[in-house]
Length: 330
Ligand code: NAD
Ligand code: DAU
Image 1 (spheres, protein in one colour):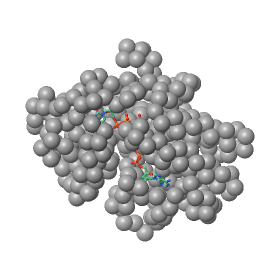
Image 2 (image 1 turned 90 degrees about the horizontal axis):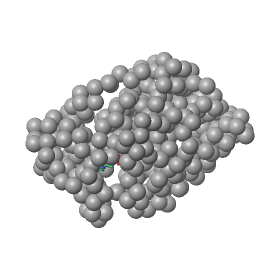
Image 3 (image 1 turned 45 degrees about the vertical axis):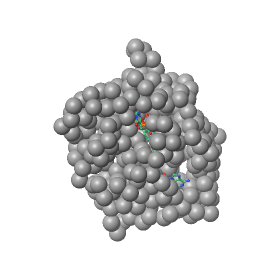
Image 4 (image 1 turned 30 degrees about the horizontal axis):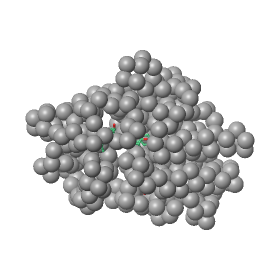
């Protein structure tokens, strides 16, 4: 099976590539990645079944032949960080909207199966005391330039499936954690700050809730959808991992042997979504997928150990990332 993975040098994509090569002997993987600030060839394993192509998913000349040679395209490539989208939205429109449009047109041209990776943020946010969770029927209501461009990309995929009969599926997943995540993101930022002797930074009061899932659980669900998902369907992926940000920071500090209160509150993110929560029952019932990491604290412990053991991987990104945050006052 020839698998084309867009964005395979990013956090979730690289974990997907590693897991695919380790668990599927029949798979050959081609990664198409622009190697932006978020992409890192060092996240990928050395393997004769893996080819890395550096290129932009919005460039049809690059995309078309690669899509034509694939049995399935797993489309992870995106600009993925909300804070960056508030500062400069254009790369989000370019990659998430025009890039996805280009992938869709190439899949249509070659009749290639597509799985599109998306986010729970397309549904907007929930109140803290709302008993509801997101389901595949929740109306789209994105808040940020990031989530609105991801919502746009989902709508394009749905239209191509319905209007052109494209063989596509979509998944919307909650917040991932695990190895190889860029240090701009919440959990790796705090772990690497602590390693550097800097106090963690909590936006606002820290009451916002995210629904954490280990990246391997996300990627196993993606394979379950590719293997057995209904063409045209949307699947929600989550592991019932709702935790507020304050608790996450306190847990990291405790796990790293420090006082749980040794963090600072900083300016809040404008338009900050309050709570995300996924109802993944359709994915469980239809595909039989279940998360393996059900204890967030132990998944977090393993992630902390990974960042301690792999400083050479994250160190080159750290200073530039913190400079960006300093300019944003966060
Ligand atoms: P990431 O930022 O770590 O990686 C994105 C990758 O895409 C990078 O390797 C980057 O170089 C590449 N890329 C960016 N623009 C490109 C372009 N124009 N052409 C080719 N490659 C390009 O992101 P991530 O956290 O791994 O997220 C991957 C996907 O999963 C995204 O679509 C994101 O919306 C979705 N998602 C992420 C999460 C999460 O918690 N991180 C949760 C749900 C869904
Ligand atoms: O829900 C899925 C989404 O999760 C994905 O679609 C996005 O690609 C991914 O980046 C993530 O978005 P968030 O905005 O939720 O993730 P982030 O890691 O940026 O922040 C998580 C929470 O932590 C959020 O409420 C903001 C807060 N935060 C973040 C940083 C970087 C802090 O309190 N301090 C920080 O330093």
